[in-house]
Figure: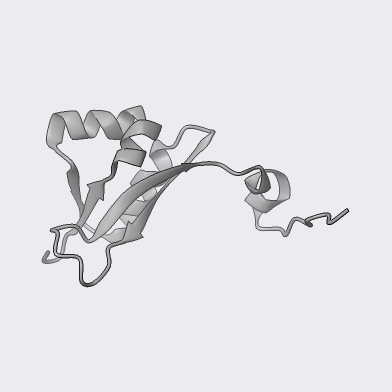
Length: 94
């Protein structure tokens, strides 16, 4: 798609983020950015505290106009505490 990085806003992101849903209602299900890092920065800014939004690159054989997808998921209990700061968290087996 030229020099622009086009993101398709997937249903999981629309459900997770009011701002993403609003974008789709006002502008449609795609958003173009000047770069992939700008798209990823936008994704991080959309997420409510209990959700994680991110941009995943589209598969090279995907025939759509998207270069990436905006996706969302609930945050995991493992993603709290030390893990958020780049430290490892132990998984107790007992």
